[in-house]
Image (cartoon, rainbow, N blue to C red; front, side, top):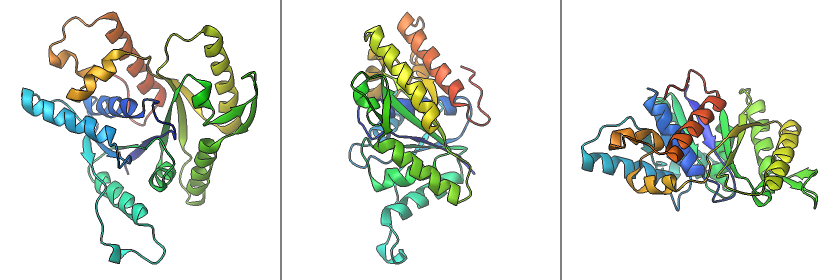
Length: 269
C-alpha cells in the first residue's frame, strides 16, 4: 500500500502548498513514484503548482522528475449506499486509483475545516502541519494564557487530529506520525521565538506530535510558483551559481525530508 502523507492546517497562509510541492517533488527526484491530490476544491493551489510545472516543462523541452496530479473523480449519485457521503466516496476512489501506481500519496488540505479534510486526516500515515511562528497560528493547536507561557487547553485542530487517530485505532491501522513544522520564520524578536519554542515543546509532549524545521520566509518560493519549479530544479533551469539564500533554502528542504523519516527515503540531494 502507498504511504499517505497529509499536509493539513485549518488556517490559511501557513505555506501548506509550498511544503506539499517541495516534499512531493523531492520524493520524485529521489526516484519515488508520487501521486498528489488537492482537496481545496476552490483555490487548488497545489493543483495549479503541478499543472504550471507540466506546462513549463513542455514549453522549455524539459523532462524533470515530477509528482503526478489527480482530480477527485465525479461519481454517479445512484451508486451511493444509503447514508454514504459523496465526498467520502470520491476521496476513496481517488486514493484507490493512485495506490495502483504510487509509493507515496500526498494530500494537500484546505485552510478550513471540511468533510474532505477530516476524512483525509484519518487516512494519514504521516501528517505534516505547517505552522507560522506566531501565537495567532498556534491558537489553532492550543490556547495559552495571557503571557504566552502556559497551555490552557488543546484547540479545534488538535481535537480533529485526535478524532482521526481514534478512527484509525478503531480500524486497526497504525498511529498517525504527526509532525508540526515551524514554517515561514522571519526576523521576529527572539523573545517571541523562544516563547513559541517553549509552548510547542510542551504541547508536543501533551498531545503527541514531533516537530521539524520548515522554510524561512524567502522570495524565491513566490518566484518559482508560476513555472511550477522547486528549489531542487534550479540547476536544471541553468542557475549555475546559487546565492546564499538558495543554498540555505535547499538545506532547509533536506532537513525537513530527513526529519519526516518516511519509509525507504534517504535524502540524497
